[in-house]
Length: 388
Ligand SMILES: *Cc1c(COP(=O)(O)O)cnc(C)c1O
Image (cartoon, rainbow, N blue to C red):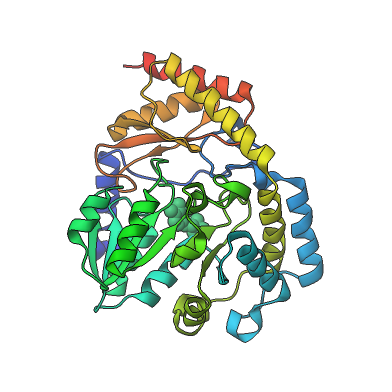
């Protein structure tokens, strides 16, 4: 590496990662059709995307995106407060309000940006953030940058939260469905604690929207709560909705505050209008997508039965996310390579994405998979079990 970087010890840090089997690199997907991907001249079934309903390849959605470009051109050309917010964006915001029964919503280019925006706009050195220990990196990052006191409670453990919380001191942060484990937060309990202690509740449901609840309204709906009871909701479009970007929803006052005070919102070129236009179509597909959710459920049951037959300890997860924890990073890599040899693409998730010694294969089952493709995965897992 360039010697001018020497003082930062970049090479040393990379070498350490290599030694610990946690060095990462990106693979380049050369082609993609439905749940098949082609990498380096070979075909694989993709078992690690977050495209839970298989919508990223949906022809109606692609057509809507093209129509959005025809109507609005390519980029939005400005930040939302200047002229970057178009009718296409407003229509999507209105659809989200109607879908979730919330007062208002705003759009971001990514869920990462949305989380930075919310956490930093609502916190300062005078507030406390109470976050589930396994909350997403974007939430942890934003919490630290916000200057707030950062208190982590034990994963999905309301008693742990209760033992740490002070009245009217800040914000409780949780995911709806946890991204690396696929389990759900006890939202009713967290809601009660937020109510009683007078603290804000923020739910990041990146992995719940589209998949859970009636009309795919997510984990909040699945657990019998109403979105308008939750102070702040974040959802992403890049997962089950098949496009890209994210929304933040809540009361009118809260959204007005974000529009005025969130630097991520004010100082960033708005989402391309064609993306908003296509995403409106995606929300409509999701709302009437019971058949997709039914197919996903059938695939999940089929896969979990196969896991049982292999006597693999399946996680309790009832969501698309089906992790198989291998413990060591080395073993996760070995299994991932074996599955790749069997034509199934599953990436090994290692520290620091997950806690040390909980490396895993993060398998995702989607509505786009066929039973034959799942059989192929089962055969691959059988081969992994024969490895030493
Ligand atoms: C994926 C994810 C995000 C980030 O969303 P992007 O749109 O991919 O930037 C935020 N929170 C959780 C829990 C996620 O899984």
